[in-house]
Image 1: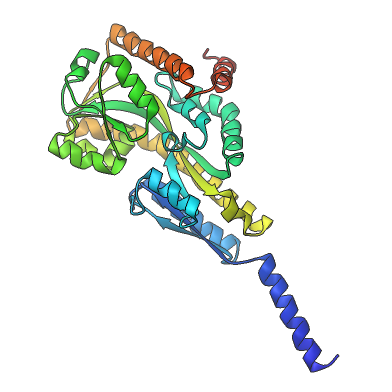
Image 2: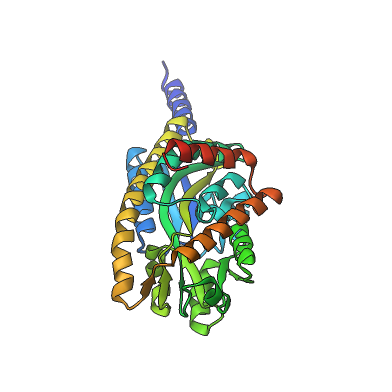
Length: 332
């Protein structure tokens, strides 16, 4: 074989190899602040992925909301300026309405019940994203959300006298507070701390870990010890971006993120125990509601779900699956 043909053959093989395993950088945005457990685990996923793919796939993160709020990030993903993002479930309800199921108020009584239910519902959630052009590469439980305030909120009557925050676009929160007789103040997550400082809002909902991570705890004085809803974080990636890399590297990408989110969920559970004590140590009063108040809140949850179903915000199918999953878990 002549030297010329040898060079041509080698060049052709190089092109084939490059086409089979193109280098890719997946750009991921999130509101999670740098240094938080969410960012630590996501960066660990990026390091693991780069090593396992020998540099063919990298994750580039934009933390702390530098790419804008959830709606802005989703728009940038659609335009191809970003490839994915880490979101709360409520921020993705427009893409996959089934994700609202975990945020339904007062639907879960304890973390064991949630874990059992998720074994059944998570696969449906993932399938719902795939049918809408997104891959839910990782789902991690963020814990239970509690109501917290700089003012007394031990009763619904007291809460009606405060200015309550609800996340932008959070239909569940809007409906639930409307059922209590409250007109909440819709704000982006990144605007809450400043709004607590200025008094634009007094009452917020967050996990104990989130209240500390976003520094809200420094402005709060009371927490109602009644789980309102369960929050999950989802790292969703545009399917078109994943499909541009090899099948082997796609699998490695999802596996690295799934592993990181599994570890994140375990650390979140441990953090919730520790941060609850931290809140108490910082002088935040943790108040258990009376049986009457707790039941009144559960009635709010029931009316919220009924109204969401009437308004077409959640399907009868996912509600039926939730009911059956809870029954299987022994908590109907």
